[in-house]
Amino acid sequence: MALHFKRTDIEEHIVAARAELQVRGLSALLLFAQESHYYLTGYDTSGYGFFQCTVLTANDQPVTLLTRRPDLEQARRTSIIQDVRVWYDAEGAAPTDNLRDILAEKGLQGERIGIELDSYGLRAQQYEALKTSLEGWCQFEDASNLI
Image (cartoon, rainbow, N blue to C red; front, side, top):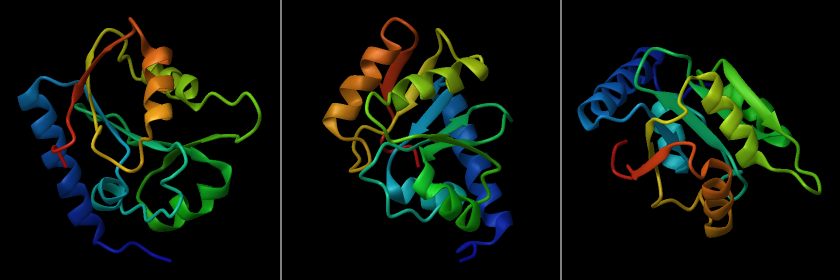
């Protein structure tokens, strides 16, 4: 597999998305929509029914993907994402806690963060777990139409 867009096109998509984040006063965007992963990074995933999230900050920090171990190679082959983090799908797994740790690394505690709520990639149970993991930690705003 290879990139479906030119790298320069993907980089332009990222620049445009970051500009829109800044216009909206958002510090980051949590991408769950399969088509957003594809458009913004080239990531062509079939595992969108499982928890996976791309974190795009409004500043120039690296784009980060949190995904399951089985999707790691596909992420490496089809996207420009260099920072791919893995959560292991086992009893008691809490990928939303892993996501909170990534957001903390990026200095996003207390910030306004956009989230793609209108997505097959974010099931209701996952959203509830995300709210629990981040309760009182940051502010969410629906940014489903940003990408």
